[in-house]
Length: 515
Ligand code: NAD
Image 1 (tube, rainbow, N blue to C red):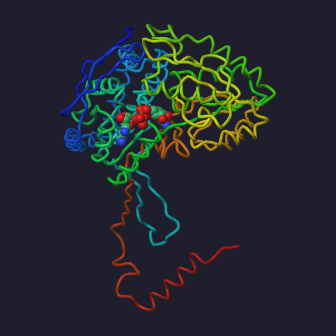
Image 2: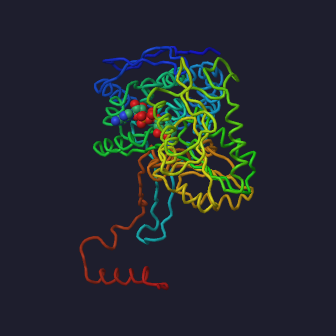
Image 3: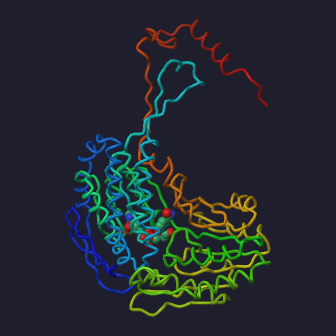
């Protein structure tokens, strides 16, 4: 494996007015530059994508699935190239790229190719409520919305960007993907992949650029799928309201982990260390805070701290060389350090880590904090770094109260050997997804919805809803050829028919017990 990589092409199809430098956060080296597309370029891309859509829809589900399956094979055949590209522009470890970016995407390509068409077959709906529809054929059809705009973040530049394009494409839409300005190369590689796998011209394009490019995209599309921060999500929703197009938002999180006194402490401690530190903590559903029942607090803290202390950090040179990679860019490093400093100033104790690590790349030491409380930013705001604040609680009730004391509601985890109890606690958490005796794993369950409660998002990805959201629902009501000359309620109005209808309504809806 090479430490820096570049897709064969860093070009996009639209005209650009400016360019953006892409560097390797683990080494600080410049990799390449990509065009910054402006509104005019976006309009041209969108016009071409709209022209390409009917042909793409006409290919049908099996034709589209064939291209996704070819892409799945392409990923497997080009695994090294994919990993090198992700690792170079994010500074993450090969393993973080392999499990999440690569593993998710090969799985998702196959999943949507197989299940996508099933979720979109016409539904033939029975109607028992209105005798007037007796004998009619009632169809619910899922039609592609047309052109979908996907806007992605940098933390998983394939999964959280291209990953959402797969169901949108499978539904028969054309897609323009606006990747993060920090990590555009993985998306460009995905465009190369689909081209090599035979996707027709202009069906899938990548619009490189910054926030202004994302904002311009919203005005061009029929539906917006956004993944990123809650702050930007609000701006996206306002722009989508102006354009009057549906938008789906996958936003920030502050996921709590609850460790009950009857937990398998070894497993809980391993999970806490891994799910707070993997991808250098830059995961929307990483464990951002931990609540531990008093009886096992000391033992748990000791185990977690030993685990975290042993982690190797640095620029990955090959598989298995480091455990924790880089922090993406200087502003992110500032947020992590600010949260740690704020906690320490208010009385928290750092058990390991606690500082930015030495360069040349951008790193923050894997950090464990105790004596934390909810007056501290590190317990209330999204840190998105390799930090784990651990708080002692009296019991699970207090843990649930504190877990829910958050503007966010993305994910959560509960550890208890009594899985029934764990499930009952999970049901009390105001989050979109909760894992018992595990964390984050729900993201890989493509049959279940993944989305946030509260300010963590609107809508969800995965499952039936994860592809139907890229469709407009069309209702079709077909009256048989052998129908009567006219319906009873049609002109001319007559008192006899009106009285008959009044009697019929009473007969149909007037029976049955009420309170
Ligand atoms: P961000 O909000 O800064 O940027 C996300 C994307 O939005 C980028 O492509 C950016 O260029 C674009 N953008 C910026 N301003 C825009 C505007 N006005 N209109 C349209 N697009 C605009 O987020 P980020 O720093 O790239 O990603 C980190 C955030 O993403 C964290 O908060 C994390 O929790 C969240 N995230 C959420 C999920 C999830 O599934 N819920 C997954 C991954 C990351």
